[in-house]
Image 1 (cartoon, rainbow, N blue to C red):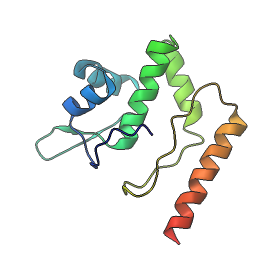
Image 2: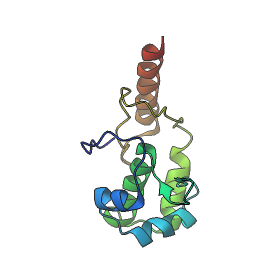
Image 3: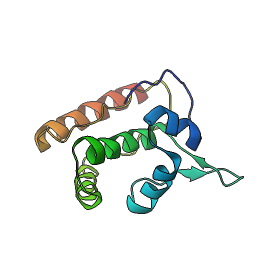
Image 4: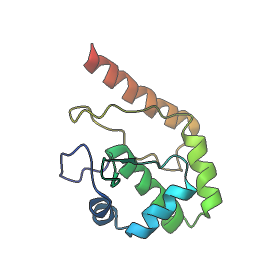
Length: 125
């Protein structure tokens, strides 16, 4: 995960917009298009984003803007990646996995996820 220098569990949509360089209205649109992007809402109904959500936004941004995928193409790539990902605990001490580039083979992705799983498991024991 990209280290933003902030140690918060939750970020507002304006903070996420500044951190990722994606406008707020685009973030709201991406929520309707990408089933994986579902930030929680607080009692006031405001979106609250986790580090996992921010990583996903950065992946979507890279696919759409840098690699020039269509929304449908990006959805397919992200759907394929969800096979190898697991929900991450929100503890600050546990390092988050790096953003997986689409250039990695499925074996490399699996090895990265396995390594991350084992690190998390060893910290829980």
